[in-house]
Length: 144
Image (cartoon, rainbow, N blue to C red; front, side, top):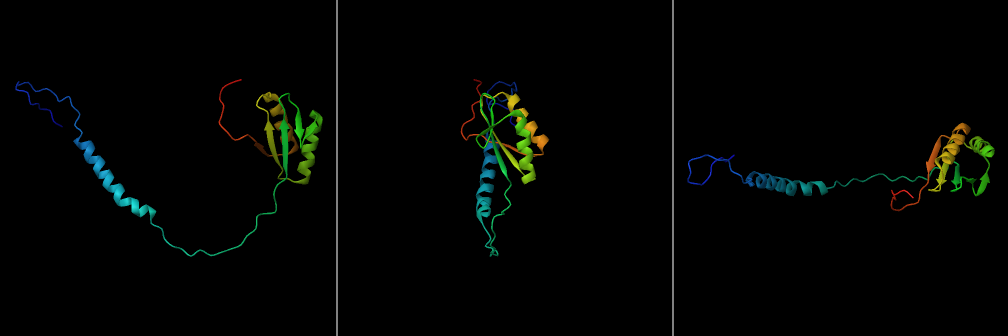
C-alpha cells in the first residue's frame, strides 16, 4: 500500500486515489482461469447407453375438478354441490380410488371461507392430495 506522495512538502499524507493495480491483476488471473477451464466444461464423454422400451403407467389417479365461483358456489364436473353433498361425493370418489386428487379452481374474488370449507370437506372424506389450479401469466399483486 502506497502512503507517499509526489508533493515537495515533507509531510506524509495518505494517498487518496484508489490503487486499481491489484484489482486488474485479480481480474486477469480470473480471466485466464476461465479461458482454461471453459473448454473442459463442454467436453463430453461418449457413452453407449442401453435401450429399453417402457410404457407410461396406466394407474393414473382419479382427479376431481372442483370449481368455486365468485359467489361461493362449489361445482364438481360442472354440477353444483350443496354443502352437505360435498363430503358425500368426495367419499364416493375415495371409495373408487384411494389416491384420488382434488384439483381446486377458485375464482380470484371468492372468499377464503368457501375454499377452506371445501378443503376441509375433502380432508374429512379422506382426500390427501389437493392441488390448486391457476391460469398461467403474470402475477398481479395489487389488491382489487
